[in-house]
Length: 349
Image (cartoon, rainbow, N blue to C red; front, side, top):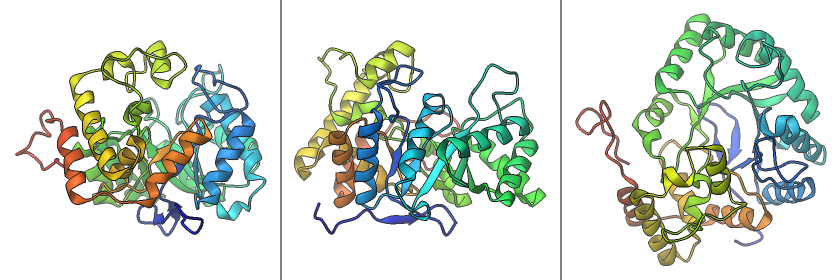
């Protein structure tokens, strides 16, 4: 990277809102060494330094959630935002998780959403949220209630755009159909898990995004550090790592018991091969693969220190060849189950 190089920008879905090709994930920032789940985080001073570095390289997109650090992540992000021109930033946060002990301190009902958006605005010391996302589906609340409430937030100016995270394809389609029928604001993007070690997102969700014009901002693009090459087949699980944390709390998306298998080592071997061929780190190769996949707008990186951040940012300044993409596609391909099996639909990258 040279001093003149900056991250590119992309339109988020069918909107005219432009975001940087990487998004700074704020789950790993805070004012202490760990959040309420015991996940290692960067302290406030280092968090500020990393967000400055991301900003200086052309990054304008920052994603957090009210439940990260029980609001601590939003507070730290808000303090940092006060050092920048607000109009230069695209700030995203989420609602759905439990934020108190009361019966209505959780969910996507109108009462919780209205209380949560006001709390998030106060914690971040801002007048509006660029992208307000529902964090998970809420089966106890009618979609109409959630969508009407989100529509009211956009109309009030507290929220600019709305998005969804961790939904199934049919849930997205149902929500979009309700919004169309009722003349309400529509979801403009999806935040799913997606990486070389989680390609099931392609079976249905990415098709929904592309057909409906939703942007895609994948979380865990490095599978909790697995795709960085840190873990080897014959290595021992290191304490203090995200995989050790995942093992401790039973987070199946990245824990050792669920991930230390032949398919993972096969993918890592392919990533290492392309890494040597390109002279780029395994993290950079893994991120670049995702950045070049159809429909992906801006992967969310979650660095916990400056070294990791700078390495991740290096993914913006090179491209993988068609042959290299195919090498990674082939190694990471997993035959999908019915009804996504080849013959029923074309799912292979």
